Image (cartoon, rainbow, N blue to C red):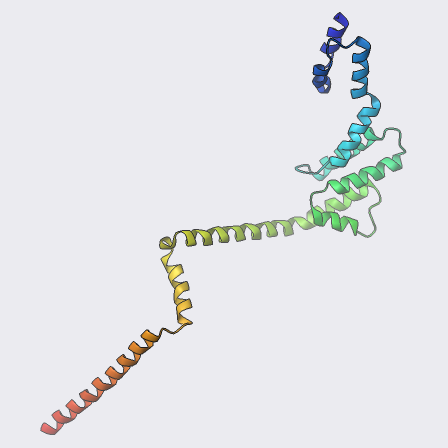
Length: 210
């Protein structure tokens, strides 16, 4: 029993979560076998290989991503030739990049990046070249979002923006003539003509009487 307690207490750091599986009804050899299965060399290598495949850049810089990929690849394949590990790390670094345009440009680069260092070098150059365009595109997206929000606010609260809405309505109305309005305009024109005629006749009579 004492050996079992010591074994459980020895589990620290990443191994701490396995304590719940080290039941006291297990024998000491069974506990040791369980620990070996979880933290043996083969199991660790398999875990590192899985981490290499799932690794994504996220908030990592290119340098940080490069370091993590290289470390994980060496731990996942400790006995593989250096050239093989480098190819695995190169492909993992390429797949981990978040920028789709950067991945496309690296894939189509001439000469084709053959090593991990080549991928990191080309990615660093592209990061400098693509940064201004990315900022401009981000600004355009923010401007479009603000415009959409402003339009929705005007539609939701028309009284708060009477001029803009009335202008749009006047433009729409101007493209379609109102028959009633046209009739009124015609009557006003006729009345104006009649008044001018009467005024001219009055002036003529006044002139003759003098």
